[in-house]
Length: 296
Image (cartoon, one colour):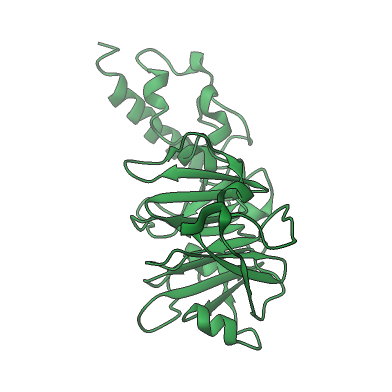
């Protein structure tokens, strides 16, 4: 019977754990041992449920929800603080996002350090998750990201990881590889990293930012692509995203795609790439935490 009733028992224990975690939280990193769980609890079944810290199973202790960005126990109602520091606090003014991207199915992501958020839905709450949760063969952190032709590109340093987006994310054979092997390099310049990248819907034009420089290239040309530098008013950005629908409560244009650039706590909005290239000064910034459902 224990084997048959394992899942209901696990779910019951999961609910009890959350109740106890909120009422009488345990010190950070304290986890219930397997021997304390009692008979009829299958650890493999418990792994299917997100665990609050202080009630996590040993094999998933690295994903305890309270101290690694998934809890609601910091007294603010926002949660998402982690042992890594304030950059993982969702509504903190110290939050730094490193990349934005949206795949061909509309799933939209924001990256910070080793974690990510889904921006297109808050159905399950505003939880951050380890990058390895969605891309187990992916990079440990993401510096830039973009999507093209049913593939998602994640860039870390000089390496690019390419995932097929059909039926989940599957790493393409032969990746990661050096970014220059995928898209070439600017003439006479060797890039050791990029700050951001984006492609607007329906286009093969990839825009890449590094420091205060902005280039575009045609992805159809692959490693033989010619990089063309463009003017823009920014000294640096941390992430960029071009999409047809509004991003969270923000809207860059009444219709058509909008271009979002982030730098530190600031979110900048342009109606299109041409407006970005023509701008002589930065537009009035919005708060980047508004992307994550924060209102202050």
